[in-house]
Length: 109
Image 1 (cartoon, rainbow, N blue to C red):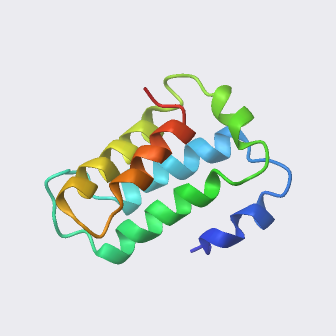
Image 2 (image 1 turned 135 degrees about the horizontal axis):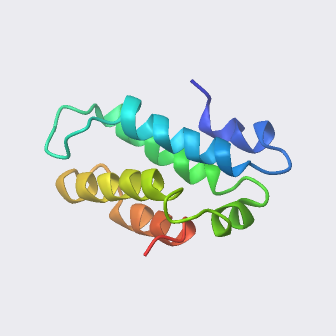
């Protein structure tokens, strides 16, 4: 796995929209469980995902990439953020304000 703080070095100039979409697709279908009611997700995994997607917002030209995504491109992004919001309500180890801030950074309704 990629250490989240290294993302700015990996994506030095920008992150392509297809790469960003693929990252969220993997998070949705391979890292996070399919059911929102599944409480067996380890806290370390939740923390990693939250840190990872937070660090992605610090990549150069992130805002431009997000602005150019279509609604269908943002489907997995929205799902992951909604999933984290649901977990934050159930788990005090996840900062609800940090998750709410991600909704703004990823320009989700």
